[in-house]
Image (cartoon, rainbow, N blue to C red):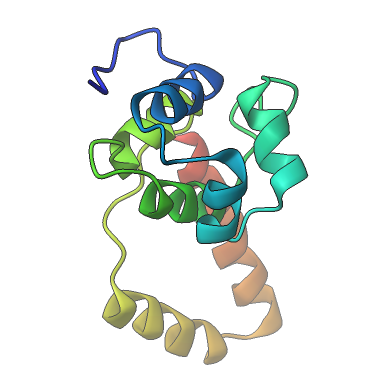
Length: 121
């Protein structure tokens, strides 16, 4: 149950989760994750989110709402996204504090650097 494969994409992962867990419905998953039902349904059908276009927060919420064998790593990989490091409120707070101390030009440079880092795998 819940075996992953190297070619598992997000629609397959979601359909497998729904098949392996009969008590789990698309509506329930949408409600638990805070993702609109129409969006989730389009992911299940493979009509949206192709090519890693789903934002990280949505993928984290989806993973949190799925049964535990559907780990964040598995969900991100299925969505074609690099797996982010673990979240740390302390690191995020430190980064925001430092960002607020920067000039407008430095803030933009930091955003540009973050965009470059997202592309590096």
